[in-house]
Length: 115
Image (cartoon, rainbow, N blue to C red):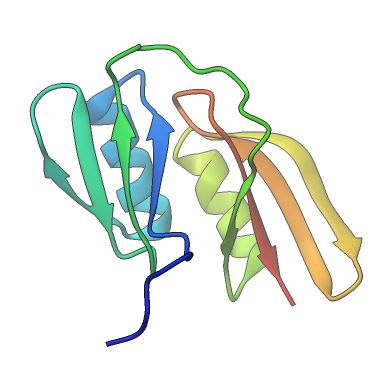
């Protein structure tokens, strides 16, 4: 077992709509969910533990950007759009790869990158 001390162990994002959140992330990123009541769901399949909290039912910018990885960036961009995500920054290059930013159905800002 690896040492968890001082490592990022869990990511929690705000959630406005439980059903839309599960549909979006399962469709685009193939995550699986466990319901912990109407206002909390945890996810698996993202290579880190995490959840969505709907207690406040609002999203505000925290300044933290969660960046996901995809082998095929163009395909993932199309999947995000098809699932109802809003592209907030189209694909752009940076040293080491390319990425785009999007807003999920809750208004959370995330990014996807690839080499």
